[in-house]
Image 1 (cartoon, one colour):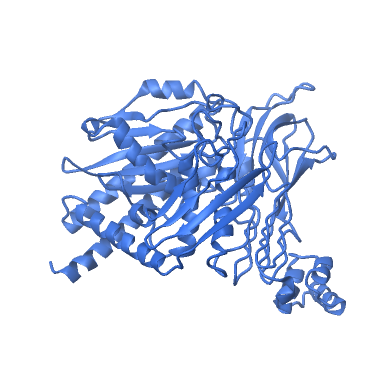
Image 2 (tube, rainbow, N blue to C red):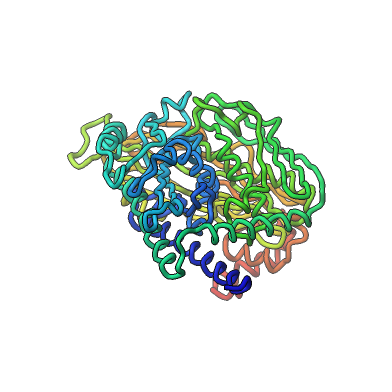
Length: 570
């Protein structure tokens, strides 16, 4: 086969590998028990060469899982030992420092054998609703309180599942059937990937993946380095402050662009927190690399080689490099703000490229429901754990408005009300976009959401709040306005904290407003037709149209009248 023909064949195989891992991910979505996987896509899937280098990732999934999992397979190979890897094995862990950052993510790795020869590995990760301990929240003071720890070990040896491990898991979690179902779903999706891979190898007459692996990694490395070489050789600093748990947290970024790499150093960031919002370096690296790759090389497929030129360091003991046994359950809160901190530095080198700050971390909460204790409960009252993922608004981009209720950087989907209510005796009384929450600007920030949650008759509950941007809303860029902050309280006016487990009595509801993304560019430069459209759609109020954008009262009245009579033409 000549070189050109070989390159064409390898490109076809590369595309096929991407489709293989996407089918792997979709199998997990279809078979998972947890709503966080089925409805929100909080997962990752990928294929690796025999050295543990990621060759392809599924489109479905989160950067935190995918990019953290890119390092994880190396740990699996080292811990299991190559001499102990046999056909039919399946490996498992939820180690935060050798997996994806906290105990609530289970990663499974399956060696792929073809005609008796090890040709690679499949790996996948999923967030599970409960892993025991204090439950999913920031209240723990160490990793030991946060749940069951599963070291890297064999879930199955030569096709035989470790039943003792299953009994240990079942005995330590609140939702044993759900968790064990998710574990088997993870194992099954790796098996789907393996079947599709061996089918591809049959089709193309391959005996191993060495050739295609070399093609993928070399081309990805070269393409990424070419993009970096086009950038100015400069240094800059970025800084941002967020709520933290009890005291504000500062993230500092020192960015250096060199000829063949971009260095991101978090020296100057806050120290490890006493509560579970700390972030292992693996998760910090995942989102720092993702932020830079989105800005510098967004169209180059994600794999070990395209990630390698983005080097990330942080001093040990900082909140972005928390060491064992620091509590890390809500590591996503810090991790999801890493891209905004990186972009604060990058914007000074590459103006007009990166977006304004957005909501950042997901607006998650988990409710632990139980029969009411202040009076006799009905016979059908039950205990249940319900986790729901929600999003604020994303930041405005240099040429486009921010996206409403859209998760950036995590990329997970907002869970439908119906799916949440199906998971347990919870009622979502209200879920709608939050007007005026997007920061004003030439490009408007994305809107957050209003949400109101309660329990079915006969139940009380604890809510684990996992919010930020209560005291530090998203900052605008290049003259744009800030987004609206987070608010949370009970329907009787009782204030609530942005983080931590809090009791909600029978009959009470929790009322939340999720943050908006910030604006980009001066509001005075926003096109009048866009202001009129936002007013007509209810994204902004008449007061905002007049105060922030200077829309004349006569035009405001005309738009509102047209909407009233159904005559507005968007």
